[in-house]
Image (cartoon, helix red, strand yellow):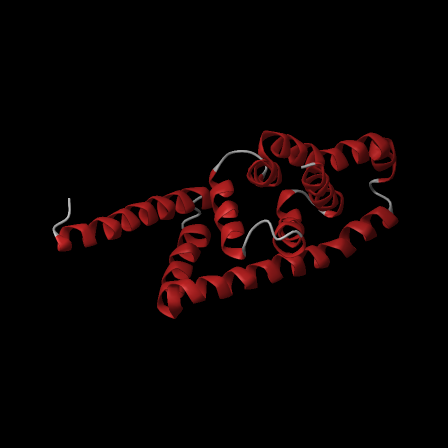
Length: 191
Protein backbone atom coordinates (compact mmCIF):
# COMPACT_ATOMS: atom_id res chain seq x y z
CA UNK A 1 0.00 0.00 0.00
CA UNK A 2 2.93 2.33 0.69
CA UNK A 3 4.25 1.91 -2.86
CA UNK A 4 0.79 2.74 -4.26
CA UNK A 5 0.65 5.92 -2.16
CA UNK A 6 4.21 6.75 -3.23
CA UNK A 7 3.27 6.29 -6.91
CA UNK A 8 0.13 8.41 -6.46
CA UNK A 9 2.23 11.19 -4.97
CA UNK A 10 4.95 10.93 -7.65
CA UNK A 11 2.47 10.84 -10.53
CA UNK A 12 0.43 13.83 -9.39
CA UNK A 13 3.43 15.81 -8.13
CA UNK A 14 5.14 15.39 -11.50
CA UNK A 15 1.96 16.52 -13.28
CA UNK A 16 1.58 19.49 -10.96
CA UNK A 17 5.23 20.44 -11.33
CA UNK A 18 5.24 20.34 -15.13
CA UNK A 19 1.67 21.58 -15.70
CA UNK A 20 2.60 25.15 -16.51
CA UNK A 21 -0.50 27.27 -17.02
CA UNK A 22 -2.92 25.61 -14.62
CA UNK A 23 -5.38 22.73 -14.74
CA UNK A 24 -6.09 22.44 -18.48
CA UNK A 25 -2.41 22.29 -19.36
CA UNK A 26 -1.81 19.58 -16.77
CA UNK A 27 -4.58 17.30 -18.08
CA UNK A 28 -2.34 15.66 -20.72
CA UNK A 29 0.34 15.18 -18.06
CA UNK A 30 -2.14 13.55 -15.67
CA UNK A 31 -3.30 11.35 -18.56
CA UNK A 32 0.30 10.30 -19.24
CA UNK A 33 0.80 9.34 -15.59
CA UNK A 34 -2.48 7.59 -14.76
CA UNK A 35 -3.19 5.92 -18.12
CA UNK A 36 0.17 5.35 -19.79
CA UNK A 37 2.69 5.09 -16.96
CA UNK A 38 0.83 3.58 -13.98
CA UNK A 39 -2.14 2.11 -15.92
CA UNK A 40 -4.64 2.96 -13.18
CA UNK A 41 -7.29 3.93 -15.76
CA UNK A 42 -8.14 3.21 -19.38
CA UNK A 43 -8.48 6.02 -21.93
CA UNK A 44 -12.26 5.68 -21.71
CA UNK A 45 -12.31 5.90 -17.91
CA UNK A 46 -10.03 8.94 -18.03
CA UNK A 47 -12.25 10.74 -20.53
CA UNK A 48 -15.31 9.94 -18.39
CA UNK A 49 -13.62 11.40 -15.31
CA UNK A 50 -12.56 14.45 -17.30
CA UNK A 51 -16.13 14.98 -18.55
CA UNK A 52 -17.64 14.63 -15.10
CA UNK A 53 -14.93 16.82 -13.56
CA UNK A 54 -15.70 19.57 -16.05
CA UNK A 55 -19.31 19.70 -14.89
CA UNK A 56 -18.33 20.38 -11.28
CA UNK A 57 -17.17 23.73 -9.92
CA UNK A 58 -13.52 24.31 -9.10
CA UNK A 59 -10.14 23.52 -10.62
CA UNK A 60 -10.13 20.45 -12.86
CA UNK A 61 -6.69 19.23 -11.79
CA UNK A 62 -7.60 18.91 -8.11
CA UNK A 63 -10.99 17.31 -8.87
CA UNK A 64 -9.34 14.70 -11.06
CA UNK A 65 -6.57 14.14 -8.53
CA UNK A 66 -9.08 13.63 -5.74
CA UNK A 67 -11.18 11.16 -7.69
CA UNK A 68 -8.31 9.19 -9.20
CA UNK A 69 -6.42 9.17 -5.89
CA UNK A 70 -9.53 7.87 -4.11
CA UNK A 71 -10.12 5.22 -6.74
CA UNK A 72 -6.53 3.98 -6.59
CA UNK A 73 -5.72 4.46 -2.90
CA UNK A 74 -8.90 5.23 -0.98
CA UNK A 75 -9.27 8.30 1.23
CA UNK A 76 -5.52 8.44 1.86
CA UNK A 77 -4.90 8.27 -1.89
CA UNK A 78 -7.32 11.14 -2.50
CA UNK A 79 -5.65 13.36 0.09
CA UNK A 80 -2.22 12.34 -1.20
CA UNK A 81 -3.10 13.08 -4.84
CA UNK A 82 -4.66 16.48 -4.09
CA UNK A 83 -1.68 17.51 -1.95
CA UNK A 84 0.74 16.33 -4.64
CA UNK A 85 -1.19 18.36 -7.22
CA UNK A 86 -1.21 21.63 -5.27
CA UNK A 87 2.19 21.40 -3.53
CA UNK A 88 4.26 22.36 -6.61
CA UNK A 89 2.22 25.52 -7.07
CA UNK A 90 2.46 26.45 -3.40
CA UNK A 91 6.21 25.82 -3.29
CA UNK A 92 6.90 27.69 -6.52
CA UNK A 93 4.70 30.62 -5.53
CA UNK A 94 6.51 30.97 -2.22
CA UNK A 95 9.93 30.73 -3.87
CA UNK A 96 9.28 32.87 -6.93
CA UNK A 97 6.57 35.39 -6.03
CA UNK A 98 9.05 38.15 -5.33
CA UNK A 99 11.05 37.37 -8.45
CA UNK A 100 7.97 37.24 -10.66
CA UNK A 101 6.55 40.49 -9.35
CA UNK A 102 9.88 42.25 -9.83
CA UNK A 103 10.65 40.87 -13.31
CA UNK A 104 7.24 40.05 -14.82
CA UNK A 105 7.76 42.63 -17.59
CA UNK A 106 11.26 41.32 -18.33
CA UNK A 107 11.91 40.06 -21.86
CA UNK A 108 13.31 36.81 -20.44
CA UNK A 109 10.19 36.06 -18.36
CA UNK A 110 7.95 37.03 -21.29
CA UNK A 111 10.04 34.81 -23.60
CA UNK A 112 9.69 31.85 -21.25
CA UNK A 113 5.94 32.33 -21.08
CA UNK A 114 5.54 32.69 -24.83
CA UNK A 115 7.80 29.71 -25.61
CA UNK A 116 5.83 27.35 -23.37
CA UNK A 117 2.45 28.13 -24.98
CA UNK A 118 3.11 26.10 -28.18
CA UNK A 119 4.18 23.08 -26.14
CA UNK A 120 1.01 23.22 -24.04
CA UNK A 121 -1.04 23.64 -27.23
CA UNK A 122 0.51 20.52 -28.77
CA UNK A 123 -0.09 18.52 -25.58
CA UNK A 124 -3.77 19.56 -25.47
CA UNK A 125 -4.13 18.90 -29.21
CA UNK A 126 -2.63 15.43 -28.82
CA UNK A 127 -5.06 14.59 -26.04
CA UNK A 128 -7.96 16.04 -28.03
CA UNK A 129 -6.99 13.85 -31.02
CA UNK A 130 -6.88 10.78 -28.78
CA UNK A 131 -10.38 11.60 -27.47
CA UNK A 132 -11.55 12.26 -31.03
CA UNK A 133 -10.41 8.77 -32.10
CA UNK A 134 -12.03 7.22 -29.03
CA UNK A 135 -15.32 9.02 -29.75
CA UNK A 136 -15.19 7.92 -33.38
CA UNK A 137 -14.77 4.29 -32.27
CA UNK A 138 -17.69 4.53 -29.82
CA UNK A 139 -20.12 6.82 -31.68
CA UNK A 140 -19.24 6.25 -35.30
CA UNK A 141 -18.72 8.96 -37.88
CA UNK A 142 -22.33 10.24 -37.82
CA UNK A 143 -22.54 10.40 -34.03
CA UNK A 144 -19.19 12.14 -33.78
CA UNK A 145 -20.10 14.72 -36.41
CA UNK A 146 -23.53 15.30 -34.85
CA UNK A 147 -22.20 15.80 -31.31
CA UNK A 148 -19.22 17.78 -32.61
CA UNK A 149 -21.56 20.07 -34.55
CA UNK A 150 -23.90 20.51 -31.60
CA UNK A 151 -20.93 21.25 -29.34
CA UNK A 152 -19.54 23.81 -31.77
CA UNK A 153 -22.90 25.56 -32.05
CA UNK A 154 -23.40 25.59 -28.27
CA UNK A 155 -19.87 26.72 -27.33
CA UNK A 156 -18.92 29.04 -30.16
CA UNK A 157 -22.13 30.43 -31.60
CA UNK A 158 -24.47 30.38 -28.60
CA UNK A 159 -21.74 30.87 -25.97
CA UNK A 160 -23.22 28.18 -23.68
CA UNK A 161 -20.94 27.04 -20.87
CA UNK A 162 -19.38 23.60 -21.58
CA UNK A 163 -20.52 22.25 -18.21
CA UNK A 164 -24.17 22.70 -19.22
CA UNK A 165 -23.73 20.68 -22.43
CA UNK A 166 -21.72 18.00 -20.62
CA UNK A 167 -24.40 17.73 -17.91
CA UNK A 168 -27.17 17.44 -20.53
CA UNK A 169 -25.22 14.72 -22.38
CA UNK A 170 -24.54 12.82 -19.14
CA UNK A 171 -28.23 12.88 -18.22
CA UNK A 172 -29.17 11.82 -21.77
CA UNK A 173 -26.67 8.94 -21.60
CA UNK A 174 -28.04 7.77 -18.27
CA UNK A 175 -31.65 7.91 -19.48
CA UNK A 176 -30.78 6.19 -22.76
CA UNK A 177 -28.82 3.46 -20.94
CA UNK A 178 -31.67 2.92 -18.45
CA UNK A 179 -34.21 2.58 -21.30
CA UNK A 180 -31.89 0.15 -23.10
CA UNK A 181 -31.52 -1.98 -19.94
CA UNK A 182 -35.29 -2.07 -19.37
CA UNK A 183 -36.15 -2.95 -22.97
CA UNK A 184 -34.89 -6.58 -22.92
CA UNK A 185 -36.81 -7.25 -19.71
CA UNK A 186 -40.09 -6.17 -21.35
CA UNK A 187 -39.43 -8.33 -24.41
CA UNK A 188 -38.74 -11.50 -22.41
CA UNK A 189 -41.66 -10.98 -20.05
CA UNK A 190 -39.38 -11.13 -17.00
CA UNK A 191 -40.28 -8.57 -14.35
